[in-house]
Length: 112
Picture 1 (tube, rainbow, N blue to C red):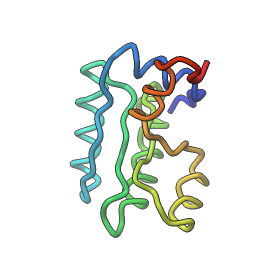
Picture 2 (picture 1 turned 90 degrees about the horizontal axis):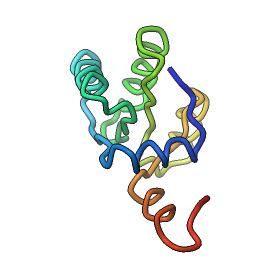
Picture 3 (picture 1 turned 180 degrees about the vertical axis):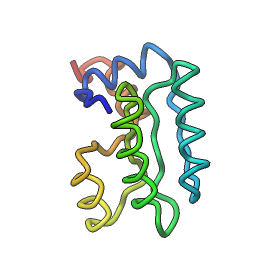
Picture 4 (picture 1 turned 135 degrees about the vertical axis):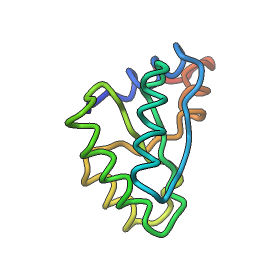
């Protein structure tokens, strides 16, 4: 899976205009959601940290798409506990809030 810089992620978000945000507890369903998004040209996808086992599904998704479709960028959102943060960042993924980042980039004085 590609490792985008923060600016690349923001620019891609602004280019496509939308970032799919989802959660599903079943890994196979989650894989299908990510595959469908990628086929539609939405290669930046946020997996929300909603379920008890979300980090495990997320880590399995990262492993799967690293080998099968390296152009997909998965980020994790809604991470509020330090333990969850550590688990996800150990996977090498960034925590994302694409809407906030895109707003900051598009406003005067925002990210460059």
